[in-house]
Length: 337
Image (cartoon, rainbow, N blue to C red; front, side, top):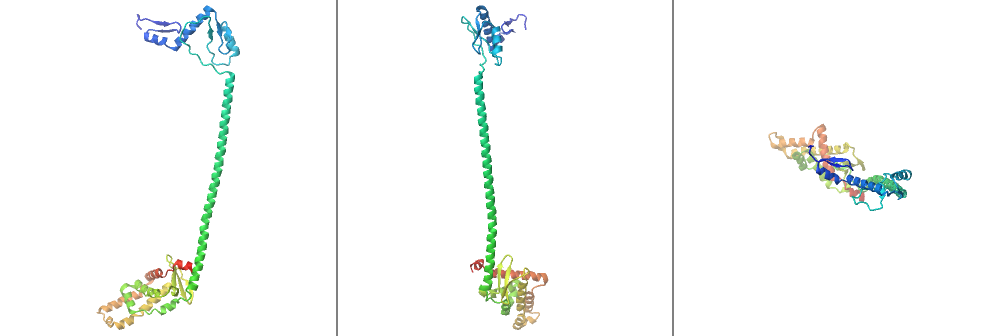
């Protein structure tokens, strides 16, 4: 700080500075204004010997010592202690109003506040208990509803089985009725084979188109020529190729290996093969190995005989599949009988 600089000193606040801006800022502070007012009141109190009043109970005291004793004895629990208010005989010099702390609530107000807060807390606790009770009740109702729905699902899941069992039993009964009553006069499979009466054109069809097509055509032509109730075989399940064959006036389900059906196809093929000598008599050129009919005759013989072992089983399966497509029983016909 320069030696010739002017110093500003506030004795009331014990504040000192060298800048006018800082001095003006200090004069505008609340601390300075309050200290000035207190200093003025103290001077007035000394000069006029006025009474000092207690802000808590409005009692008057001649000096600060009496007020201090009074506050210590009767208002020691009150915090903070407010500045005493000086009762002046004459109006004091007007100054900036001091910033006073708000008066603390008296014991009655504190008691009322405490009661109000307690009641509010109790009400909140009661509301929480009611809410918990409501949640528990709703959870119980929800669990009961879930249990009821699960029981219904279990009941519904069990009913289709009962219905299916009943339907299956009815279908089995109706199938037996269809076979043993509706088809009681059906042709036996042996009779069907005996009455094939294969034509030479059918033999040539086997030679031209092969074993599967030729033998299938021979069988299906005669099956389609019969009434449904007269047919010697019926398919009740196309997917599994479940076949019922009538033999010796009885209906019997074929084995999973289709033993009876394979034997049936084999017998038809044998009947077809037996027609070759007749065809040769009507076509004597086939005896000339240089004639085209000779090669054709060899082809008919090969196609009529089929194949060997596993390859022959595959041929049987293909013929049986063709037959099953044409003799599958209409389920509506069975259930309505």
